[in-house]
Image (cartoon, rainbow, N blue to C red):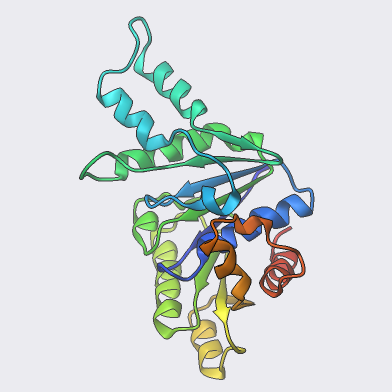
Length: 249
């Protein structure tokens, strides 16, 4: 039975970094193989994981629209082949990237392809980690649906927290099949105040914990080093692992 975990929150909260830490955690705990899904149109989960991406779901759709389907091959077979080619393999995990259409246009078709493809792949992996784009569109388009855990990532700001809580409220309103929601406050400089904890509690969301601000994250990022390679002694890695120990079965 596949256990799916989706991460969501406003831009700049570090959710992609935490998605990478979650993959690192699952590898460390030998909960493999893992399917990492970059459902963000501004794809960069591969950089966090240190994986080269040669194709995306969006590119597969664009190829089909341009008439690249070989003679004698149906569009369904062509799309299945292209989507399988879009899976980047690494040790202990695979990665698939939604990507984006060329030029202007809606991402709905790429989302629909991704959701359909995931439904076919889901039984091959005990764990799926999905990094969603910033904001709430992924929920309204139902990319984030039927997940066991929804991790709402906020920074210490009130705006970040409110954005995360609105995503949870929308997920409940749409009844998209979220098993459990947790708030994680990332880049924290101090423990959350009583007011912040009350705001979370009043929204009916469980507080999972905080991940401290860590200069090493910025150092790795500035040097182009995958943050999944950060040492286990890093304070933010230790804090993230402690949270995952409590909430990931």
